[in-house]
Amino acid sequence: MSVTVVVGSQWGDEGKGKIVDILGERFDIVARYQGGANAGHTIEVGDKKFIFHLIPAGILREDITCVIGNGVVIDPNALLEEINLIESNGINISNRLFISHNAHLIMPYHKLLDNIRESGKNKIGTTGRGIGPCYNDKYARKGIRIADLLDKKILEEKIRTNLKEKNNILKKVYNVEELNVEEIIDEYLAFDAKIDKYITDTASYLNNAINENKSILLEGAQGTLLDVDHGTYPYVTSSNPTAGGASTGTGIPPTKIDSVVGIVKAYTTRVGLGPFPTEMLDEEGEELRKWGAEFGATTGRPRRCGWYDAFLVNYSRMINGIERAAITKLDVLSNFDKIKVCTGYKLDGKALKHFPTDKSKLERVEPVYEILPGWKTDITNIKNFNELPANAKNYLSFISEKSGFEISLISVGPKRSQTIEL
Ligand code: GDP
Ligand code: IMO
Ligand code: MG
Image (cartoon, rainbow, N blue to C red; front, side):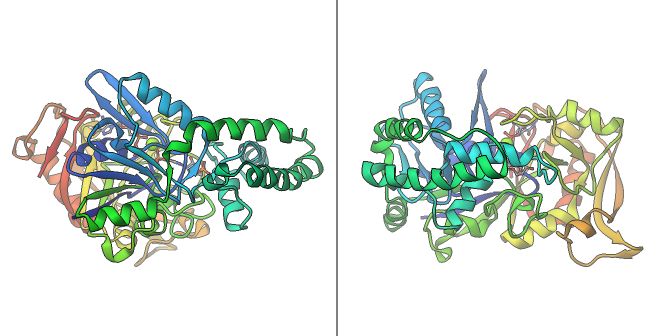
């Protein structure tokens, strides 16, 4: 029996999809615990590329059961699209996908409100997938849950009550056209007919599986610095991508979680707004984006790029309890003569002891860099750690020491085969 959490250590897009696909081979179950279709987890197998938004990245391996936990917010259209994509690739999902009855549903008004709010001056740079407004309703105790789909009367009543309030807001606050309640009811009833068979009490399912000695991989979405509690608030998502969220988002008790693997990109990226101390706003930053193909898997937006920030990842290690890390996209750094690593921040000339998540401080910090020599060699076909150039090994041992974890896996390209396990 083992329960392992895979967590993004930076601002998301660390390569969680690829690593979950690799590690998943050793697990019976892969479960998502938070977020929604704001996530975009890429897996490349052979000449095929899959991007999953809601369904766990374990789905490509047919002996794995996939679970969408109670902490996830589900957009019916995104889910159905993904089920179709998987089935049209000849992958069987019947009896191997379970959706929590307690997960909340993203409604059309959530997406609309997300986009309207993003057009105002307090923009976050969200993915526009309705995530914030949906979690808003969840915590305000008026959300609509997957289980509500199972009772037509309750579903209709909840949609009517919610829409009355939302239409008022749409009309009176934002001056936009109201939504039609009957259309939404019909759409969600049709959705119910298609997903009924996947709905279950996933917390009981997962706990029974643990009792039967099955192993479970918990797949985080987003990243630590996007966590609503521990991230760079308010420029965060509305859930807990950190390891603690894996427990509340699935119903697996913290005492049953054995380990936390941090997914760590060999440099830093961020999509959307918010402070980013090591951001490269120069030509080298442009090159990093180009070499790393840093464009959003969900929205296609160019990702902001910067040097590796060991001070930030060390904070992430502390919050998540990361002991082992998978380093991704090391190959992208092969193009640089010199590589910078941020080892700490100064604020008003003084070195900071702790990572500041506070926006006003983080916007003013001065990163302290060490410069390491590059290796300028193609490493995308290397299969053994020993074959890596000395400067690449040196880089890895430097970031591992400064970030406080051991490295258990190194990714040198997007494909399954481009992986070095230690
Ligand atoms: P996730 O959201 O954490 O799953 O990451 P994304 O899928 O959004 O972004 C990671 C991108 O990098 C995807 O396009 C992956 O195919 C790609 N990728 C993953 N690992 C590597 C790697 O080691 N090297 C390179 N060059 N690309 C990688
Ligand atoms: P994966 O799982 C990177 C960012 C958005 C925005 C902020 C809030 O692929 O790593 P939201 O739509 O969640 O309300 O947006 O969070 N964001 C991500 N950035 N990777 C993701 O997911 C993200 N999901 C949300 O860009 O800054
Ligand atoms: Mg992504």
